Amino acid sequence: MVVTTTEGRVRGVLTEHAGGEVARFLAVPYAAPPQGAGRFAPPRPHARWTGVRDALTPGPSAPQPRRDAFGALDMSPYFGPGWDRGDDHLTVNVWAPRGADRRPVMVFVHGGGFVAGSTGAALYDGAAFARSGVVLVTLNYRLGVAGFLDLPDAPPNRGLLDVVAALRWVRRNVAAFGGDPRNVTLFGQSAGATIVGAVLATPAAAGLVRRAIVQSGSGLGAYSPEQAARVTRRAAAVLGVAPTAAAFADVPDEEFVEVVPELGGIDLRTAERRDPLMGLSPFSLVLARQPAESPLADVDLLIGTNAEEGNLYLAPQGELKTSTAQDVRAAAEAHGAADPLVAAHRARHPGAGHGELRSAILGDGLFGAGSRRLADAHGRAHVYEFGWRSPAVDGLLGAAHTVELPFVFDRLDLPALRGPQGLLGPRGPLGPPNLPAESSAEPPAALAAEMHAAWVAFARTGDPGWRPFSGGGGVRRFA
Image 1 (tube, one colour):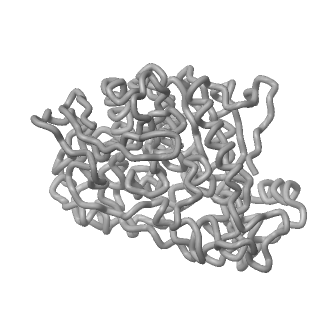
Image 2 (cartoon, rainbow, N blue to C red; image 1 turned 90 degrees about the vertical axis):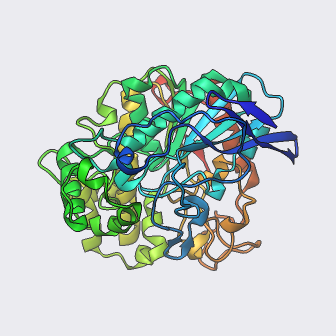
């Protein structure tokens, strides 16, 4: 199957699925390869090609460390295969129903702490969306040093600029794949969701998005220029170069990947701002004002979090069991005023142990508070909470960060999600002996169908099936 884009013709493949054929196009360029000094420049148009370019196999990904191992969890379905080398990595994957015409379009921005992730992650196969009548686009963007290190002689937030460039590509080309360029829903998870929130506050993206979905992101997740400068100084010192894009242009990508672990542990607290990522990543957006404190685009918004976000950062590492009162206080200090914050969470979670309290504070600091502020800033957001508890990690993972993704993408059948290290837990009718009675060892297919359908309905009409929170509605709970 051949489609003509503004850069040239691309050849995809048709695959048979229950409910019809799906057209799939992989690694279609939306911007020129970022090389040398171009790694620190705005995205540039891709050169046109002659003939037909095959879009049949996965393409390169942005330079990044491999992050599949996550304590007791195998997170490769989420992070993907790591760095698949190649300069031409500013690409999109497209799935569309065969014969589609003017279908709603959904554009997904992956997570990964601003340093990892790609369209090559198995979770992000878009066939289920295409079977539901949606044209699904996933995109790569620059990560780590190239994407988000703040440099005085380079534009900030180059990874965000990549996302806007991909949206412009969608506006120009998605009709050729059967999509409606006037009905585009931008959605993302974790770092990707924080980027989505920033796109809504970016004037250059005006008119490119009609709707947005923010899954476990934050409208308060950006670093200030002062905070970002501390990361830049450390990176320059470790690499032995001046803190400028001109000096960084001669450093190979391999060194950019190797420097990421060296940037952990920087104290980013200032008189005006806490560390919005609470030490989990040295990279984020760099903005003088947070997205939730800026004027937002007038688009439909669906936003939510998972009930136990913080468990991902504690349970697989064994820290949900071993956390102490001092760990709880340290998490609270990173988030705000320690004593009132701990007291507030104790009131919300009576009888919770130290690990549960620490998880609640982490989840609220990283995602909950920033999501509420973004919803408030928007004014009429539809709000959800995901509460199904995964039986992974001996029943301790619960409704942790990322667990909603297999349900949204309707990918419960992905083999890598199951087993002793799988995100969705072991197979079989019986869970671990300490699994709470209300949980099931088998992820419920009905919940995936319900959640996936709500996302599709929102993309079609702006109504996921419940009233906006600020319009007298409540929080829709998926559990």
